[in-house]
Image (tube, rainbow, N blue to C red; front, side):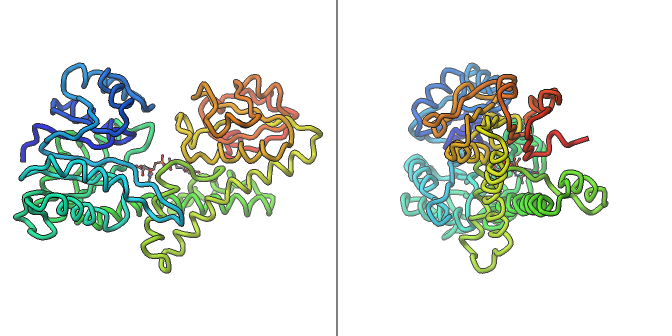
Length: 415
Ligand code: SAJ
């Protein structure tokens, strides 16, 4: 199959880098997003999200005439849907964005087109998308009714890139490609081969959906194990960081790192897509989510306990992002913890986040003050390390003397 024009629906953390990488291979790329401000920004050759090196590649793609953004879908040979799949109340996945994205492209679909769902999705979502498309275009045939002879090819190909390393991982990682038929898989694999250096491994759509959920649940369960260990070690007066370093010397043990909780919009979300489909069976996966979700509360209690020993304590909270060396504060346990500490009115609360210039909305209405790390350390009686940013690793240990240290990441205990 040849793909002259490729359309990416959803120009966020995955869609925009993917669009830019196709464009860098000299394909005509039409990026579609409902956010007019994002579309205008991209058409100026600029970006509305933070990801290393993305600005350079988007500027080149737009400047070279290979990438153009719009709010209204246009005809293309392949469509990649990369919109969010959040969850609703009771941890049920919300397919609303996938539904509206598929309905928006339905009117421009033509015989021979390929539609790929990239959004992380519960098992069955690709088949559901195919149903929405078929209902909107009764004049075309789809794989669920016409198998290999269908006019439209459909596949699921989940994104698996790590924020902060997106451009490298997009090209290098293997891709799992789940077509609704064998030909659908082959068509999708030939599309990804335009820029993927890794292997494009094919399977069916349901297995590809479950594969992505499995990867993130695997990580969540392993982090929950580490977080549970940290709580157990607190009770038993054992340094959990030393314990994990020692246990990991065993050739078949590889424990992840405890922290203040699991943030971001993937690992803290995707396991629920499994739990909501199979609640009775997914016992370990659910418990891991509960362990990780309860970790911020445990840290807040630790701070409360430490604050009770210092009159009018000044508390410095180092880091707000959901993980090290990025500016992304979405679903960040650090933000949740700082909000809870401030609400206890223990004393002045200072926040340090080297990757932002102003506090996020949810902290703006509080008394939390955003300061630089030097000022925070000068003021603080209690230092709460929430994110293992490189900028905090090199803090002069003398600046921490005579202060109560709560290091949720073990950053300062590493040898
Ligand atoms: N975390 C720990 N301890 C650890 C590792 C992570 O507490 O040992 C915490 C982090 O601080 C963070 C959260 O877990 O709050 C998630 O961070 P992460 O680096 O594990 O993962 P994400 O959310 O940035 O990206 C994950 C990746 N999935 C896997 O590694 C299996 C990425 O490859 C996926 O593409 C991405 O989810 C996604 O989009 O689904």
